[in-house]
Amino acid sequence: MKIKQTYKTAVITATFLAIWMISGNMVKEDVSPKSESNLDTLASVTVLKSKAVQREPFIKASGFTEADKFVQVRAEVGGRVISLPVKQGDFVQKGDLLCQLYIAGREAYPKIVAPFSGYLETVNVDSGDYLNLGGICASLIDPDPMLLIADIAEKEIAQVQLGSNTTAKLISGREISGKVSFIATSADKNTRTFRVEISVANLDRSIRDGVSAEIFIQGKTVPAHKISPAILSLSDQGKLGIRVVNNKNEVEFQAIKILEDTTEGLWISGLPLEARIITLGQEYVFQGQTVKVKEISIPDA
Image 1 (cartoon, rainbow, N blue to C red):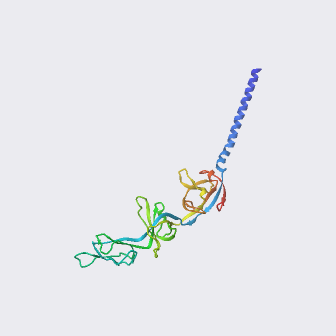
Image 2: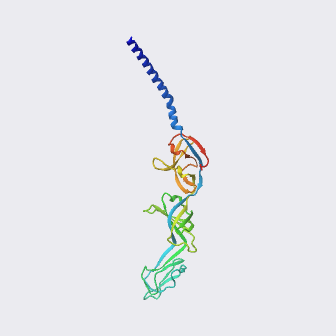
C-alpha cells in the first residue's frame, strides 16, 4: 500500500509541474510584447513646433583702430636741412614741401614733399640737421577714414562680406560704425586667421590710431531658430546639439551652431526650416525612441 501511495503522489507532482511550466510559458509570451512596448512609448515630452526666421548673426572679434595712411617720409639723397616750413600737427596737402636739403656742389636743392594730404604726426629734424640717405624727415598720417582691424577665424570668415555693416565699441566706451572694406584672401600662417578691415568715417579726427576695440561684423543671412540654453546637450561624440522628434515621433539628435546669445535666448542654425524641438523631458529619452508628444507653438514661460 505504501508503494502504491508513493507512485500516486509522484504522478500528481509531475502533473502539477507540467501544468506550472506550461502556464509560465504562456505568461511569458503574454508579457514580453508589453515590456518592449513600454521601452518604446512610455516617455512623454513637450515639443516646440518651431519655424526658422532669416537672421543676420554678428561675428564678434577683438581688434584695434589703424589709420588708413601712415608713412614715414624719407630722404632719397643725403643732405643738410636748410628749409623746414612745417611743424608737428600741421595739415599739409599732397605735394607740399616738408624738408629742403642742401648738397654741396649742387645748384638745385632736393625737396622732400608730402606724398598725400594729411597731418604731420611728427617732424624728425630741425633746420641745420644733416639728413642721411633714407633718414626720416617727418611722419604723415591721414586719419579719415580710420580703419578697424579684426582677425577673423577661418571657420567664420565665410560669413563676412564686403560692405557688411559693422559696429565697434572702443576701449573708451564710445560706439562707432562702418562697413567692411577689405577681406584678406590668405590666412596668417601663425594664427590661421584672416585680416578684415572696416572703414569708419573720421573727418573730425576724433578716432585715434591704435585704440583697442570690440568689433561686431554682421554676417550672411541664415535661417535660425530661437531656443532656451537649458535644452542644449552633447552627443556621444561631444558635439553640441539639441533633441528633436521627427514626424514618426521618434527622438533624434541634431547638431547645431550658436549664432547669437541674447537675453531672450539662443539663436541657432543647423536645423531644418521647420523643427519639432523637445523642450521638456529631453533628459529622459534616447536616440530612436518613440515618445508621446505634447506640442506647443511658443516656449513655456
